[in-house]
Length: 305
Image (cartoon, rainbow, N blue to C red; front, side):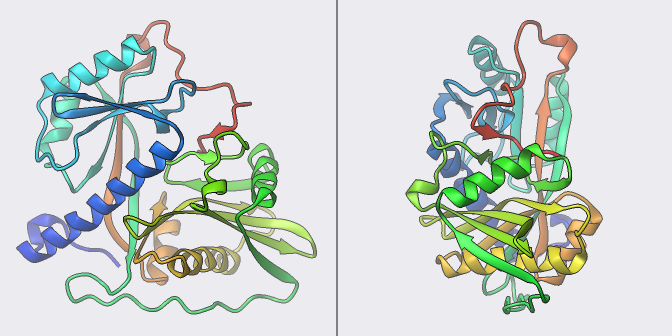
């Protein structure tokens, strides 16, 4: 289901859409805080950075919450601060909260689009009179079993899956996947892993991050074994993850829509294509001596494969 652009929305729909997107913004703010990031204010932007990890997900400039527009001067201050911290200059924000001209501000600073990902949202109760269908328990094919866990079993499986190129990995790319005991938020009860097996062989996994204060759940990542991946198993895994988030008290579930196939599947389950996660970065040739990514052995991993 696609909500039309703001030019074709009434004021009530625009307001409600922005409220949902701001809940997602707050969810990610809290999720990143759980990973130990530090927050600094530089005028009308926040500089998010992690003292140890260089992952793009944990080091970026973003407009301060509840601001309507940010000038290039403030953004540049934030980027300069990232450089001082030896972090790659990068801006991340949700399109739909800020006006389109903000992209022009970033381009004027010499930044380029690094990543654009559609944000699919499932608002329990619907939006502006549009009702979303209930997520019923899907039929599980013969020989397939599903397990929900919040303990070390999920971490162990993700370690295996992340290193194995035989699995397709899907992620919004804005909340890292913790696979190490030191930084994982599993111990706080914020994350749930759905493990999918066929004859005891792991054919899929999904991680859901839940934030109680925003009553929201994020499908952080999904992995599917390429040889057995099918629309049926993908839908089963996603639906099970959604139900797990809703059962934890979430009234809003959001997930990535990386390509048309992913978006079509989400729409079948009632998701609405509401906005886009925008990431702008400096060009590599303009950044000297700053390492852009962590060593891949780090316990917190950005999933983009």
